Image 1 (cartoon, rainbow, N blue to C red):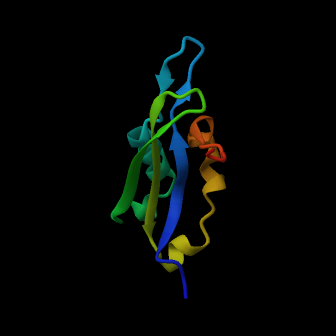
Image 2 (cartoon, one colour):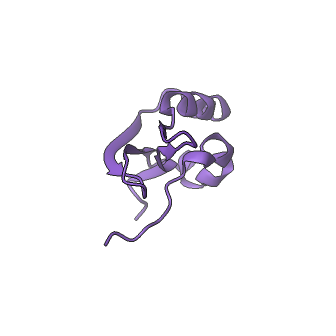
Image 3 (cartoon, rainbow, N blue to C red):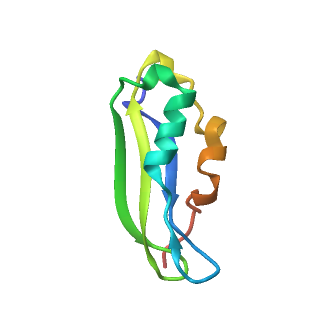
Length: 97
């Protein structure tokens, strides 16, 4: 059985800058550029999920990702193809204590 949804933008979150502020990912820009690369998804509904979290420095930020419903055209998609759009904000795996 195929998955119900295909992740097109993996988990992203804000990063602490050198001056101690949070730099949040601009999901609108990322999705706009993603859709320019994948125009066949222009009319598809994209689900963006947003949650709250804290950075490893303890600062509040958003955790966000995007997905589309499963389809034959989306089935083979690998989000790494478009990593250049969001690489800076990729969420690191971490263990919560």
